[in-house]
View 1 (cartoon, rainbow, N blue to C red):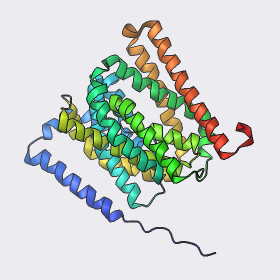
View 2 (tube, rainbow, N blue to C red; view 1 turned 45 degrees about the horizontal axis):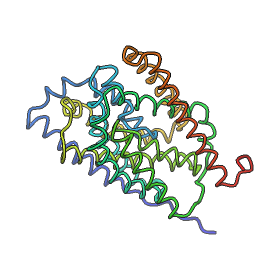
View 3 (cartoon, helix red, strand yellow; view 1 turned 90 degrees about the vertical axis):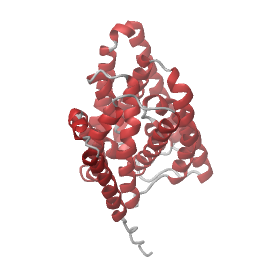
View 4 (cartoon, rainbow, N blue to C red; view 1 turned 180 degrees about the horizontal axis):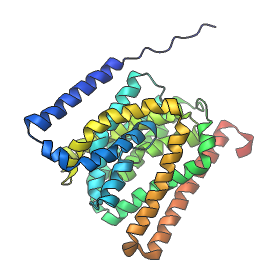
Length: 335
């Protein structure tokens, strides 16, 4: 049996992208004299150094760090956190996606293609019609609940998830339809409301239902979140406007994430994904505690109880996906 040579990498495309981006950013800073704006927002650049690594190395967008930093630490509106997530991921995760594609990393192509089409229709509907109806407090809670459940899932299932090899083979049509439904539902809801989350949805389906290797699931989720962020930015530019403050924070953080997210995708291959996922899982749980504490005056014990129940509902859904995946794979344990 002859061995197939590894696919040829085309990193020159990624380097060309970096040259184009940094040239544009330098023009904005110096030709348009916006360096004071960058200096005023330097804390966000520092925060997104971690956020960009998370974006490139995990199924969690850079907004996973940017949202709580802006909303919980800097006390900015949740709508600003959402808009900033879209804006910053359109650079960082796009850069990571170009890097992934240039390196020819394996992707769940059929499911990704369906999810991108679903997101293309779902995200604009959510941004235009659903997100404006969601109160500030609810936006914070949706973010806190979704990511807390995701973090808890990894704290007790990480060893099993990291042990997956390859991917359960279903038909391309089945994968496409599943991706289409997930992309639409997640785009119209969690992504449109918080600016992140659609990557977590597709990742969960891949690792729990399809038992995909992390080397397939994480790059697939990164590419989908990059695409969704670009859709969100396009919708905001075309039909609405960004919250005040997004541009200044974007100017400060964009040059960091353009390089940081791809480096995260590269470095995690050397140190392993388990330590990074475990660390980020802890952060996801801590931000839930932080949100409940900071919003206690508005939530009360009843609201916190409802939030905890919502986390449990997500965990039950994750477990049902895992059981379903086991039955589809023909495991005796799940029959």
